[in-house]
Amino acid sequence: MTSATKVLTAHVPLALADKVDQMASRLERSRGWIMKQALSAWVALEEERDRLTQEALADVDADRVIDHQAVQAWADSLDSDQPLPVPR
Image (cartoon, rainbow, N blue to C red; front, side, top):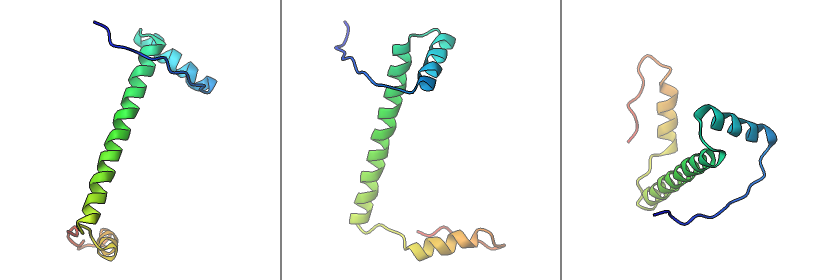
C-alpha cells in the first residue's frame, strides 16, 4: 500500500543541487530520497523548536523564570576560582 504523495518544486542554488546529486550518487539513492530525508529532518527540527518555544512561553506565563542578573552573575563567575552555583 503506497501513501499519497505530492510533488513540491523548489529552486535551489546550483552548488546545493550539485551537492545533493553527489550525495545521492555516493549513497546510491535517488535525488528525491535525499530531498525527502532532508525535508523530514528539517520539519522535525522545526517542530521540536516550536515545542520548546511553547514550553518556554508556558514557563514564563507560570512565572518559572530566572532573574537575568542572577544568570549574568553566574556566567561572570565561571572564569573565577569559585564559580557560583547554577541559578534556579
